[in-house]
Image 1 (cartoon, rainbow, N blue to C red):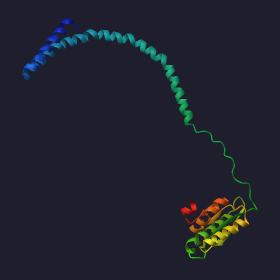
Image 2: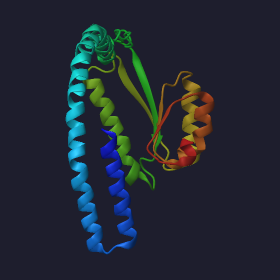
Image 3: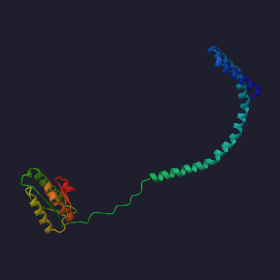
Length: 217
């Protein structure tokens, strides 16, 4: 941009500012329009003057940019391939090792004894009786289907008639006759509470139908 138009532009700008400070709205509008009309040709001329220079600069750096892109393209492609392979490895499910066989050998001829005691004829028999009979039926079905790996299940049951003392007596009798009790089943919450510490001490698993936080915890 040449020096004279710049001075002219400044002159008109100062004039416009003066009118803004002292003139009416009509005067201000007219002054602004005059400034715009005066500046427009100068701006257009400046654009036309620098356009060839800008075009030449673009044409000059274009090969350099293209060369840079071509130079780094293999590196970018290799990095993308490495990332893709890494993601694929992570997504692949690990091969599970075959689990060790945990089942026991054939137990034909063996006897597995389950012990349970509860009220079958006392005041709570209407509640616990169906559970006791259901347990007996389940064991009978298991035996009819070949037992547990060929072993037959034998049941030892005591009718406690809802007496906690009878439940404790049954527990003492069973543990004195068998020093390797696998599991015991109880039906009344009172029985479980009375024997909770004994089950822990003797390390005998207990399955209880009578829900009780005291017996459980």
